[in-house]
Figure 1 (cartoon, one colour):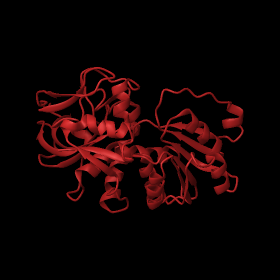
Figure 2 (figure 1 turned 135 degrees about the vertical axis):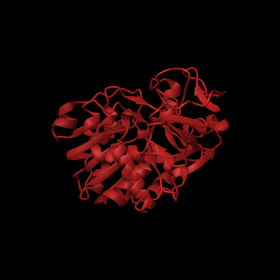
Figure 3 (figure 1 turned 45 degrees about the vertical axis):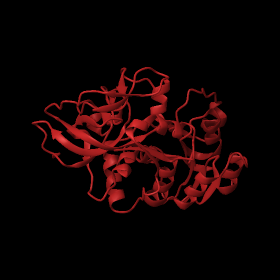
Figure 4 (figure 1 turned 180 degrees about the vertical axis):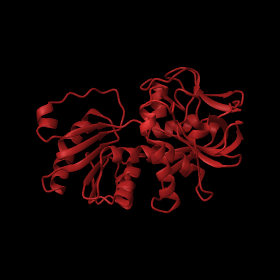
Amino acid sequence: MKAARLHRVGEALRLDLVEVPVVGPDEVLVKIHASGICHSDINYRDGVGKVGRLPVTLGHEIAGVVTEKGERVREIGIGDRVVIHYVMSCGQCRYCKSDRESYCEKYQMIGKDLDGGFAEYVKVPASNALRLPETMAFDHAAIMGCAVSTAFHALRRGRARREDTIAIYGAGGLGVHAVQLSSRIIEASNIIAVDVVDEKLRHAKRLGARDVVNPNQEDVVERIREITDGLGADVVIDFVGRKRTVENALACAGKGGRVVLVGISLEELHISPYSTIIGKEIEMVGVNDHLKSELRQLIEFSSSGRIDLSTSVTNKVRLEDVNSGIQILEGNIGNPLRIVVAQ
């Protein structure tokens, strides 16, 4: 089969011919129909995030059809349409037993530590394959595996509530889903989207943001304070990860606010705890991955029409052109939201 693999950090992926994986007794083989390209894939390519081995097939947003299954697999059948939960966990440690498998003591990630979705097939434990309704498009299902589920996890980690004002830094592939989930699922009192691209802010308004702020045109902290009558936001989620956005997130959070950090960069942050955190009793919360239970909820939200992913995928590329898709995302060419390798 064909697989786009990372051979050396800092280099483009290579399209290789490799053997189709052989499934074990508790595994399934999935014919991949869609695999999303995530900013994390760029981080793995560039060494910002360390992969488990080289070469490795990247791609962790995966949806497809089960074509083979191991002899002990009962819950999933051949022909089932599935989305892959990319967190590989032991199921036995104290974290796994308390529905916190992303903290698993033996954690591995499909598409980083193990071969992922930029290929024609992938093998995964049957427990990592979640059934999809027949009506759900594969590209929508694939991005639920990270772009939507990580946004949902961020809102849950920030304990977002209906009465809250939620400020979202970055209205890209994750941020727009945080906006929609805040509007349609949380039903937040107010949602403020922050981005430097006006088209992304217009899209955020269509998805439920009441207010939008472009930091290139106005002081974002002052504007959010103005919007909130000086109180600040209850929940601030940073999907950008730059030093400046994190500093602004802390500055615009109100008393008792929760600042949720999702975006990744190598920039260091230097803060004065009293003026930024202690004085207002702000909580800083990190987000890494999501939970299988959250992915199940999102499948239900999508299938019942509570969320709409019809405008989320802005670009599709072939497996042979995965590097072109990565370049589109990396260069922000045409303001992409989510790019999917479609097969």
